[in-house]
Length: 386
Image 1 (cartoon, rainbow, N blue to C red):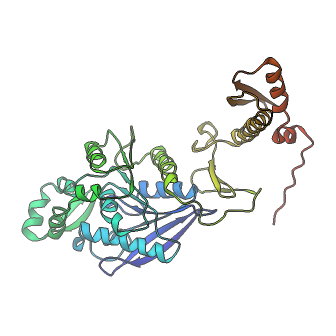
Image 2 (cartoon, rainbow, N blue to C red):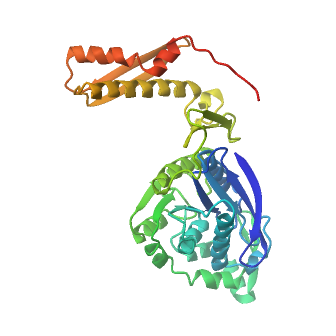
Image 3 (tube, rainbow, N blue to C red):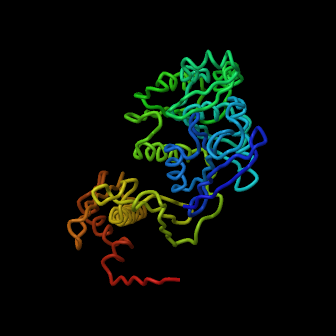
């Protein structure tokens, strides 16, 4: 995984600071991530989700909105509308460099922002909201008693999540003018709404309102047990995993043909102690160690992958033979486990009206699959260092 620092002009003309998370292999999609209100591109959720997606082949741009983090400008001069314009400009930067985003992801108020920006980013095919408010005016309750001072003075220092921000009156005026329901109804993109039932900052009823307002295709995923900021690494990993699987239906495929056929590349992602990205041509998956071995359990372990390869080859070989002989085989299932370091137990389950003779023949064929023969033959492994 490769992280690049990027900069591009924002809605106020000031430079915006971003990070582009790139996969180690082929880019299967490009995404734009909008962080939560007053958070920043380096928030726990933005960082972890972006890196999890990059490990799955999705290039992700996350950036600081105007006046936040390392971006230029004064936050007191910004509005929700200017944040939306920042997103459109970020999409333009991607369009001019590695390709316009087909996925828009927004956390909290960032979710409201991607819903508002979607129709201005024509290449976007899928929109994902995480803990997002259905109405932009929802953030007013965060201001507490400071709202009166903002209304009276035009600007006020507001402490949010332990940090001080200058918020201007135009921000309040602007969020009151947004018609999110109309925008959601006219989204014309696939929508995934993700929300924690226990979210005590943005109640889960907001997810229902967003989902109800949207037209199909739309989906809802409950982030049971997660907090609003997704501070638990496993929650962020779960969001990324589900998100990556969901958007796959709306993608055209890898932006390049992938690696050389027959070559598998394995590389560290830098996410956790042992996580690896495994690339085979245009396909990608994650490998990891279980927690008992010091890993994060974000993917199958090395021996799990070995058993998976043997099981897949066994099932395919049996299927090919059964079809060639027109046997009444309905389904093949293979269960495998390591008995010890020298023995693999492989159980073959055959469904269908098969005779005893046919079952015995398929059992024989199962042990003739190429991977089985390779593992039980005189296999030589040569290791080189370029």
